[in-house]
Image 1 (tube, rainbow, N blue to C red):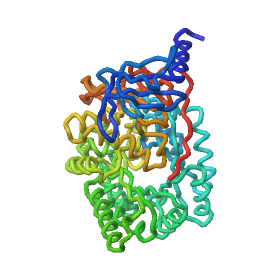
Image 2: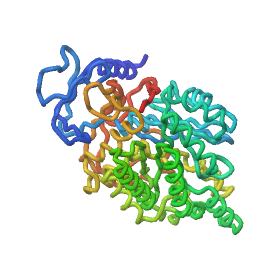
Image 3: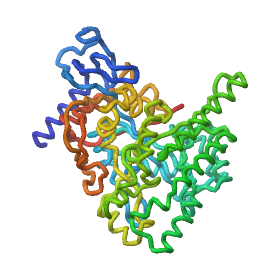
Length: 489
């Protein structure tokens, strides 16, 4: 064994036994405070006043000096696609590569998606996805399960998955002829999930409208990547969001609208919440217990459709669905995130390098794999573009990237907070340095939306369940140690 590998393993083992992080400023959803964090046996044992002796490590357990640094809970990304196969040999950036980028960027937990084949059972898809992830993923992870058929057989499998720790499912109103569920099927899926006590994530674009728009574009020879957003008109998202909200209300299904790309989407969700609350007040039932959630992703929050006119490579890098929208939407989405009307910030990380996208573009934009990287960028980019300028408070920032996704996705008591009993997922973040962003790990620079962006703030050190995995901004050598997480509502 080489000296470097031995030392890395020794450090990781030693730090996992117990430690005390002192001198830093804890940033939590409840506020900022100077405090020490004591870790034992992979969990947070205590949060103490600076210098308080009770509960501190003894003997040779190391102390970590966090002077001038922010101490954050490990971030939670509730929407990723690591190592996702698309067929024809195409796969998004792998489980190990993507998860290492996550850790380097301060994210210690992700929730990915098990996507079944057309006739595959849901449990089989979950087993297959875990087979791809286990032993390769470096951060902890959970799974949502996509549903592409609303047959009686598939719907009957939902309660078993919830018992197995997968309480969240995904349905598509988009991608006609591939993943799209027609309204009657979507309504059946919602009813089944409501009866079982789960939550449905909906990709809300109108598949029929998108298909018609795409046909017009291809028929008229407009197939370069720059035309991609015209195949996903804003009206498509608005119509599908309205439809999903109406169906969820009728079936009693708990619902999350994923990757809201329009200010109007967030406004529709907000108005529906208010209507439900008013109806509950009239009925004197106190509140409507059905959760209605809304997520925004990094690229919709901080990038816009001008990239499609910035040249072929930029348009390819920005090929995602929903597409990037008009600049004016960003301010509305950020305001809604700041007020909590949008619940949390995710990435929809689905990274295909520019070379892969370029090769596929020979067949026109419909052939280009959709997706953007972002799991490594989420903390630093959002800190730079929202916290530094005062658009998000540090408290709301941590809530949006850690505590809210953890709690709303069924990880309460384990992830997303710096509190006794929680996993010792801890990030030391320096809010001061200014530099130009470079993609982390093996992420592709050429296909990045963020490469070269002037940023402020850096992830310095990261612990996963008390074991140090990032030191000084670099991965510590070792075998991937990510665990599958069962989630409960």
